[in-house]
Image (cartoon, one colour):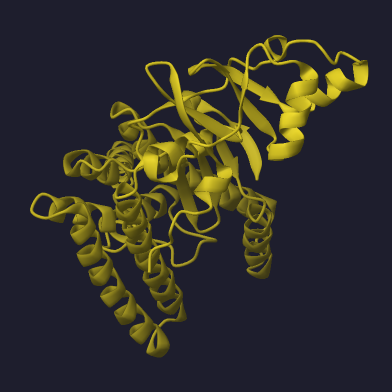
Length: 350
């Protein structure tokens, strides 16, 4: 993807397949005998369309930020945009606000375009039937309305699926609300596929997309519920090898050879001090510094996690960080260590 900027502190990328869309649009104009002016206008319209899509995604991202949820990035694809939130809020009021914010932006854009058309005296709402021609403002207005209607289809992964789940979650558990919303989405998807087979192949594509998206969301929430039943104590290693802060480099080298771990925790009694890396020990051995204390080599910037950390919170920490392992501390006392090895033991949902 091509990085195009970081408005409001959120990175925005355009996927390379946009080149194919530009080529296709230009070819369609040439097929209709259009010249450079029409091609340029068509590409400006394409840029305006995806500006609306980008604003839609920023609606989600900035609303989520109000609830302390950041957005990793926004990716623009030929089929639309994706705002990758760190997570969706589980409070139904917050999820409803985040989900509906995107379509609300398109409603505002459509209203603004309509007022602009009235101001310019463009009351003729006869719309172009092709992407290569028509009333620029009217076509853009209608596309924003289409974006609203399409995104509010009550099926994952569209916004409407999340709106439906949020509304259901006011009356039932979120996992149950997800299952109901996913079932509604898959039922609609089957309808799209059926009509697509006989009337419009594009509906067939949408149906498959919705069916898979609904199933993926249900699986994701099921996995979250499974993880919540697992505590940090169920996964962390209490026998993880540690070194005293007074240990020498040669002692640390022996411990690394025996444990075959890339990092070891350093303690002062049971008090956590930091972490030392195998690479630093090797470097010291090559220099002949066999008796140097490991306290001089520790990385005290390694992030620790408290004992009451949930597994889904831990997964977020691993996602944000390149750390191999997280020391688990309780009142600055090392009680265990959890590494990427332990995460591989997490169960998958049925």
